[in-house]
Amino acid sequence: MSDQAFEVPEEEFDQRPPRVADASKLIEVGDRTWILPDHERTPHVPNVGFVVGERSVLVVESGMGIANGERVLEIGRDLGEGRPLFLTASHFHPEHGLGAQPFVGEATIILNARQREELFEKCRGYVELFSTFTPAIAEALEGVELVPPDVVYTGELRLDLGGRIVELSERGDGHTRGDQVVVVPDERVIFAGDLVEERFFAILPDEDSDGDVWIRRLIEIEALDSEVLVPGHGALGGVELSRAARGSLEEIRDRALALHAEGADSEDVATAVEAEQLERYADWGNRDWIRPAALSFLRSAGPTAALA
Image (cartoon, rainbow, N blue to C red; front, side):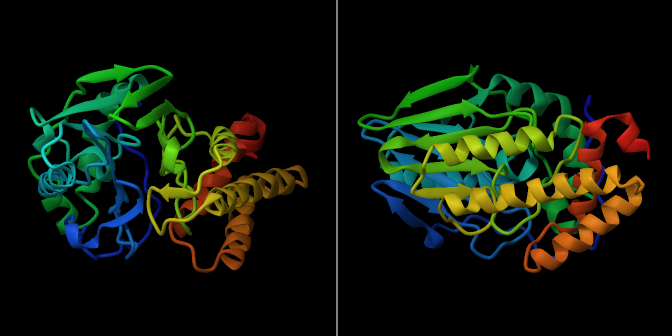
């Protein structure tokens, strides 16, 4: 995609400013596994995780911007009581990884190979785009620079924090090319990033996003049998969060293809699918992304479906 950001649907953005990380909101979801939750469903605020071992601490997501990165770093230090820190992100989007600057020299930053590639290929365009959303987001992203990882892995990485193993794995080509899932096996906690969002429609932002692959990734996540599933955004839950996300995507795909097979053109397909999804999932966010998802499935089905 070469430093080009996705095309955002016409919508009115939620004007609430991105929240700065607040340690008073921390919840412990397992023995020494902590979440700074997106409990208010504030736009562009992810769930942030802290996994504490006997020797070191893994921070999952830095939040968006330098101020968030500083606060997340401080929380990680406090929870770790001086232990060395690792930092990773579920994917390259600004609210998940562009708070990394304060961690430079303070933590070992880990990304998968495709995530690193996508970060440096696309993220400047995303910063420019996100900065047009609201003045508060532009302020949060002011001065942000891309930070190269210290460790790059391919496939899977087992990280020993001391008495606790954390498993990082590439699960890309669904939401982004470099999607990553983080598993804490002994606590059955999974950080799914934006592959799973609680009561949000899926965002298929660019040509590296594929709804069919995304559905397969959700099936993989469900097979991991988590007790606590941490979505990229929204309330924590269990495997039902992944099943709900998959159900919506499968419905969008199946209805789009069925309506096209009946002779409807692509715009009529998208309109019909959007109406059905809004009725079925009336309390979900990201509503303006239903139409792009339907059109994405038509494109994946081939040029005849996409151009009809």
